[in-house]
View 1: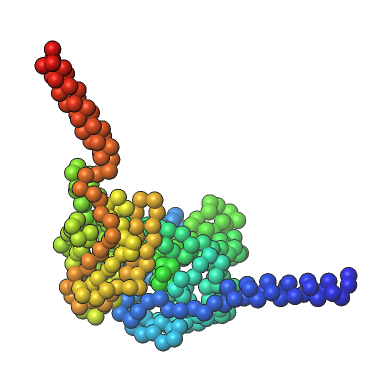
View 2 (view 1 turned 60 degrees about the vertical axis):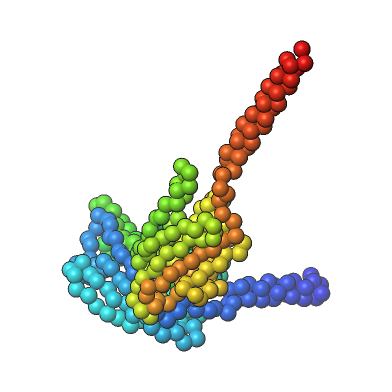
Length: 347
């Protein structure tokens, strides 16, 4: 092989490696704000030996307390099955993965194939060189949320036999906030039947479905939030939906609003919390609905207004054509009757 060909191949390898590095080590940013609070619940299952109730987590509440660069400090209040609670302060660097909460928060707006952490703790095998498996939409409390998914599995041997551990993580793509996690452990003993134990943890918030009835058609608008949502109204003339959001003063909250496209669309949308216009919001769509995700800080109570640019017409389009046909036939019938009457008078 000539020296020139070798140099060309080497150059191509360097370029490809550089491109891959740029993608994997892109600048990571924090997507949450101080005050953000989210609650989650745990569900255990399996035919194996469960942990004691003093170690079985039932509910957790996570509150972001401080952000410095790519470091997030958060408080976690955990309630266990025996009803005792504890409070722990955690730290995670969403860039490197260092801290005592690896796997909790990740950087905002990662995509499929992106490196999750650049240098997680060596003792944590789950995230060594780990990348996002897929970016998908997943339903949480009645709302579709765009999430990043990562799965890892490990098989090994223990005294009792062979064991397989599998972890699944889902984070909100726009914020890097954890929304779901699950753990599964399968033990296959040398003698006897396999046993397994697992748990699933998922966020919980208030998910309210509000019904806008026009003529005889029901248009369901879903609001998923960790605020209390009340006093929902639909203003057809103003092309708006609005509602009250109530929570603790100073607490960071979120709303994920699902709006049917055949009711209201925006190009662009205008979202206001009281008199403040929200410009940093996440918009996603499918064939039938629009999903709007935004955050705000409580100065309770707040009035949220979402204004679009198109609203369902006064007469639904589905009946406009039949109605036009009926009117046209009526006009023709009247004209024929008048003409017949005129001809009769002429005779």
